[in-house]
Image 1 (cartoon, rainbow, N blue to C red):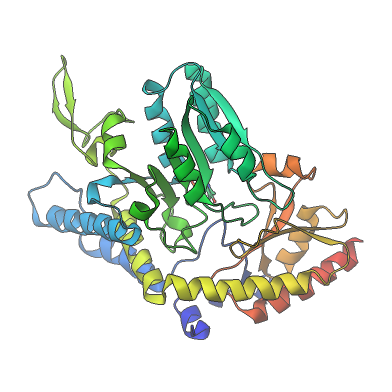
Image 2 (image 1 turned 90 degrees about the vertical axis):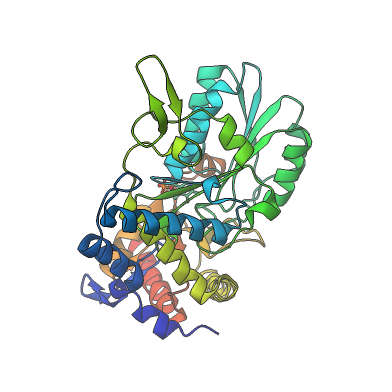
Length: 404
Ligand SMILES: *Cc1c(COP(=O)(O)O)cnc(C)c1O
C-alpha cells in the first residue's frame, strides 16, 4: 500500500492553486511532475560542481563526469541493459528516434519495408517518413482495431522477408493501450528485422527488462519519469549501435581529427556530440531512484485502481464515449462527450484548476481512425487520488451542463 499523502508532499507543485482552486494535475502523459529530490539534485549541481565533463583534469570536472557516468549506470541497471555504453543520452524521445532513423539511411535500401504502427505518436511517424523518402524504402502501417489495439493478425501477415525495421510504441500516449511488444519483437526477429520500441508512455508505469525483451532499440524521455525536460534515453543493442554511423559531428564524439580524416570515438560517445545536458542527466538518475523507491509494482497496482475508479464514474455521464478500451492499458482515459468540442471542456476544467490535455495528442492518424477532431485526455500518476477524480468528474458534469 502506498502512502499517497506522504508521496504528495514530495511534489511541491501539488500544493499550488490554479485559478483559485487546488491544482488537479491530470496531464501526466504529457509530462510528470518533479519531486523535491530531483529539484534538489539540480540545485546541488549548479551550486556545487557545475563543470564540463569528460575533458577537464580539474576536480570539478571529475566530480561532474563521475556523477554523469553514474547516472548512465543507474539507467542501465533500471532497464537491465547489458552494458552502460548501450545507453545513449539524447535530448528526448524525439531526438532518440531521429538519431536511429538518420543512422538507418545508410543501412536501408530502396524497396526495403519499414513497418510502423497506426497507434504512433507523430515523433514515431515523421522520422520514418523522412527516411522512406530519402531511401525509397516502403512505409507500411500495422492497422488498429476499434478497441484501440493493434491488429496482431494483420501484423503477422504484413511481416515478410523485405521487412527491415518495425517501430511500435510500448504504450499509446493517446489511448493508453499497452501493446504486445513481446510478440512484435519475436515476429520481427523471425525475419531479421530490427525493432525500435517507443517507451515514452510506458516507462512512467512499467519497468521494462530490455535484455529479456531482446529489443534492438528502446527510447524514452526523462521528463515523463519524474526527471527534467531536455533529456532522452536511447538504448541500443551493442551490435546495432556499432553498425549505425554517428548522428551529429562535433566535440566529444571523435577519437582523432585531422582535415584528411576523423576517426570516431567508441560507444556511447560516438552518439553524444558536444556538451550534453549534464545536470539533466544526473537528475534523470535521481528521478529513477525516486520512482524505484516507490516501486513499479506498487505504482501499477495503484494507478490501475485510479483508472478503474475514474472509468466507472465517467461512464455514468450521458453521451460520454471512451476511446481505447483495451483490457491492457495504463491510466489514460481519452474521451468525448456527445458533440462537445474537447477544447471547450478543457477550458472550463482549467477554470476549475483541473489540468487535462485536449486535441489530437500528436497522434492524428488515431483521431482520423475514429473520425473525431480530438479527445479530452485525463492521465493519472501515482501521486493522484480518488478525491481528485471526484473533483474532476464533478467539474466535467458542470462543463457538460454549460456546453450542451
Ligand atoms: C511524449 C511522447 C513522445 C515525445 O517525447 P518528447 O519528450 O516530446 O521527445 C513520443 N512518443 C510517445 C509515445 C510519447 O508519449
